[in-house]
Image (cartoon, rainbow, N blue to C red; front, side):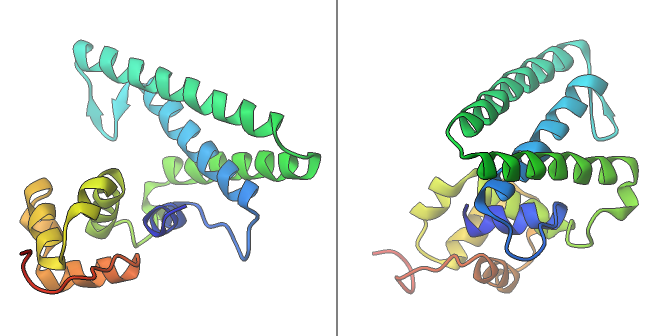
Amino acid sequence: MSNVTKLVFGMYVPLGPNPSVKFRQGAMQGYQFAQFARVRDRRTIGTKKLSPKETKMVVDKCQSTLVIIGTTVRLTLTNSTLEEGEAFIRGFYHGIKCFQKYDKHPERRPKAATTALAIYQTLLQHQAEINALRSIPQVHEWLCSKLQKSIVGDVSRTKKLCHRIGLRFLQRGPPQ
């Protein structure tokens, strides 16, 4: 699990001290399952009501993602010891419960779920592109092209957020 994944996921699903790998995997799968099932069932994203065309597209995406999650759960349990399977199932349940807590009470969402979360999620979704960049200023420019400048902030903020997730660049200065 990458540092970005741990950081973003840890904001929503507190795992406690030293969770097993299987518990952590289960919690992530459970949270994602709950997220996609909720969107599929409500046919909304956040407070946005979807048009019929958007609804079909979103429901299809949710269904395909839920099939992938189901396959992952089946394979994980098939290839695990009894103890690992038990930890995975407990984690899966924990992930669902954490999602439900924030779904029912949005005001309880972690304070860290601010604009930093949008930046971390963007970095997570575009890891290959980020890894091709050579400096923090390049990452900053790239983020500004993907998100609003008001969300990204200045270069020093980008540097701080990259430092938190362990994103470092070996080359200094502009690319040659």
